[in-house]
Length: 340
Image (tube, rainbow, N blue to C red; front, side, top):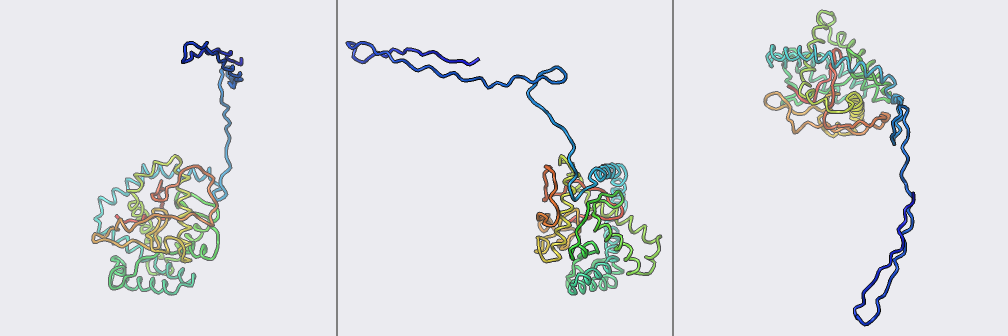
């Protein structure tokens, strides 16, 4: 009901008591209509003032299989907690660090011919020559690649990973739909095709016994366990986002975009930044300290906003300065920007 205040006479006492008092009438306050909203009856008979609408949103364009990928993501995380992480920790405790570093260098050296071929396909003869020089030095002076002699003085030839996925992206092939596969981890259709070709090329490029499964399979297993061990510290801080799957996907796609941009001389990686951990191998690895680790001040994870990647329809916060939630790859490694 509207409420109004009646006019109220106010008596003012004059300063001079001989003058009669003056009466001033204050106008009535106009009625203010009530704005209260009547309660809304709910289906259960209760009353409330809110209406909640629920529904499912369509998956983003770059991840049309979002629901399937998310389920795969959840399963892999559970397998990591129960199986892969204990194996990686046992590997760290049971195998001395010099032996682990030697195996890491040996496996990395086997991929150098693939890196060389892709730099040639990208018409970068300078980097291809450096890669060939690394392979020659480490295969001889470095005792079949067990010691990474080439990255030190006087050679100063850092390891630069490369593959067919980068070559296709360099020539404008889009990433295609995002995929999260149990034995591969995060990838896209383009990168998955490139991965298979790279893996098939290594035995033919290196030759020798590495064409036989009994040699290739153990090396892939050791590589995957070692890669999991390298990102163990980051994994301890990966449960903070409200939607780790979406954050993980966004960071991975931005990291891959940054690597392709660097091949064109654009973006932070092309300016010498260390890379984007743990979703992509750095194109410019940070200098190693005396203990074989990576200087923390040289590591950066700045990622430019992707231009070729479609925006992600999500409200989940993206934290490019720190990785979020990492799956455990069994076939495709996801090394961090720092070495253990």
